[in-house]
Amino acid sequence: MSEPCIGLTTPPAGYSDWLTDLKGRIHAAQQRATLAVNRELVLLYWQIGHDILTCQAEQGWGSKVIDRLAQDLRAAFPRMKGFSPRNLKYMRAFAEA
Image (cartoon, rainbow, N blue to C red; front, top):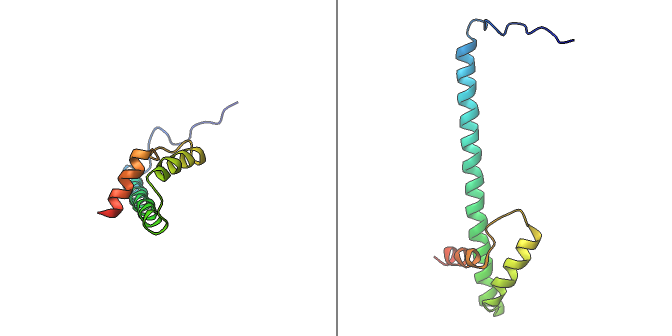
């Protein structure tokens, strides 16, 4: 036994304007969320690169540490992309610049 659909054929007065406004606000919130995620990822990548530079300079770590770090990060975050040795070297160069 299903309940009848009430008011689905004729929307109340002002509904379409409200719906348009609501969809616009949802879209704007999605864009802000995407920008916030991108900003945080760029900051994270810079911080990782900076940490690599610092450890290599202060502790004399060689370039092989990047290969090890890539392997360890991919093991810790298997569903996350971007932790290849090449990308970690890009992060290092980004922080260096």
